[in-house]
Image (cartoon, rainbow, N blue to C red; front, side, top):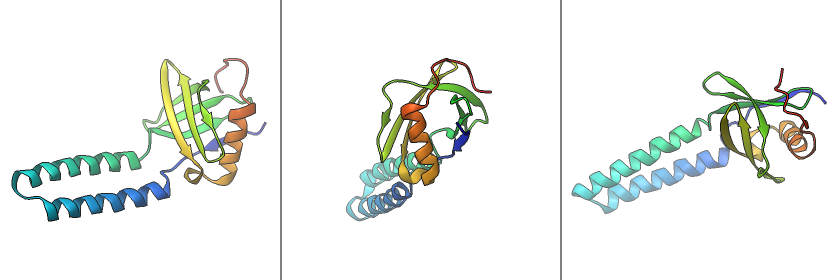
Length: 141
């Protein structure tokens, strides 16, 4: 098996939809409220926009590394790599993967869609997740 790395990025459709919906929400708040209610709705809108901006930066997982032995490691946005195993309960479908990772006493849930990575990396990760995981718990090199 060849080693590979998957570096997901935020999905393009989610970015566009989020910006459009936040703009529509801001327009509704400004047009249909006034006084204290406007201030409360603007505070809620600001909190939602900040949360969306944080989500757009990613889930905390910068990359999934699979070595030649089929062992996985997650590279986080903190600059740390963790040896992980894909746990049962992960969903693998042609258009969506919800991966349940466990390693080093921590658990990560990672949702990936096809447009978050290139086609070759998506295919490799799908094949690995379905059929090529190692049977032992040996950490990656």
